[in-house]
Image (cartoon, rainbow, N blue to C red; front, side):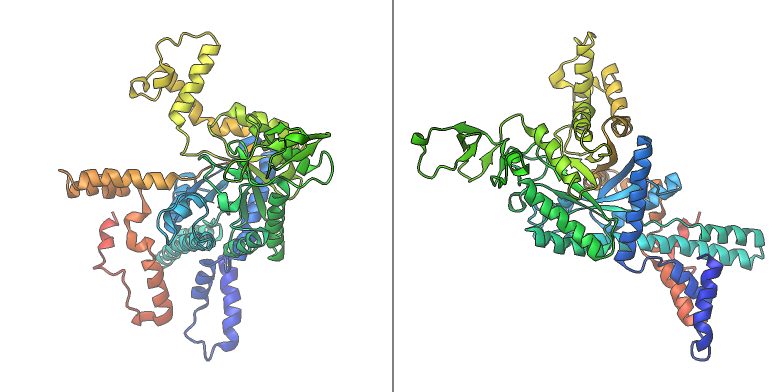
Length: 531
């Protein structure tokens, strides 16, 4: 509804009760309603699922329509990202938030910092989703509150043209609410546990849940060693559990991202059950590293499987884990992706060891032979040394093309000595266009950085500590933080306003009229930033 329609709707509710609700103003009610467009997490999940589905269709029509997000670990961080996006680009279209299980483990657990091994409290994930959307809704309320004040000022000045412009801005206000891709790790238990946690995440607002094919109790960060996968049937049961959770709650177009860690996972905890030759369990077992054995040489406690009339002994480690054949990672990834898309997943995530378009695109092309519209979410991970990787890629390409690379030592390409060289400049250009190029050439619909604010917080804190506790003293803060906030128009320089002080003042005036004791008077030091 428009601003005027919302006022009229509020007035229709007040009118029958005018004798007892005499202090309730329809326009104030309308403002509060518009500032709280989303009443529940399910409202958010349904709204953002529609956005994501439309974006997926737009990408299918043209890969230039890829989407992006940044990981966040606190509601304030997510809020500031969306405020910045609207400030710089005027729209949130194609921009999401990513909720990283790694950052929840490292920064949100009551145990303190933890590695990415699903040891943190599972409820901390839906709690963070709810927190993120609380801050994004507050960003809506704050921005609209400013427009309402502008409208009042225009009316008081008798400027009808300005008043109409402001009212048009109110009617066309774009919410800060965007999709969150939420990491459920390996499901935190069996399929029932996955279903229960998925429900909490959806009720908090998640329209998209990302789940990986690792073993829950052996889960590792995707860029560390020791990863253990599960047979496809186990993983598909969890994908179905997530779908049931979406459908039970009425978010029928919720999005599931199936992540495979098979590229870097050389182990499995289980030998898959086989119903018939060539089925999904048989295909999974075909990748096991086995030795052919004679019936007379079977040892005590040996585990054997039969294939094509032969007895095979899978290689089992003292940890009771079974080993895959070396070099089968890409084949396993392709099979994982095809079976996931054929059984309820909407998007794929292939965790790689480096950002290489050729490697990713090669797997996607194979997947698309079975699923033509297959598309990926890709982790532009800070675990990669982007500078070194891309300089090495350029070095290798130049060497293959016969260019003279004698001025470069491939093992030292990270050195600052190379920063201004032609090789480094080309590598940086490839990094700059990586997302666009990978969207077009490797089927990547969504690019994200998992841990950006973990690193930016550490970097900015280090810079501030060096200056403030050193010779610069207070100037280290003023020059490098506050003055830059003012120069760059960072809204947070007025931190009282960002925390909701002006919203509270508006409410006090609604509730108490002239008797309201407001914080934003002449003695509020935030007025020093009006200039």
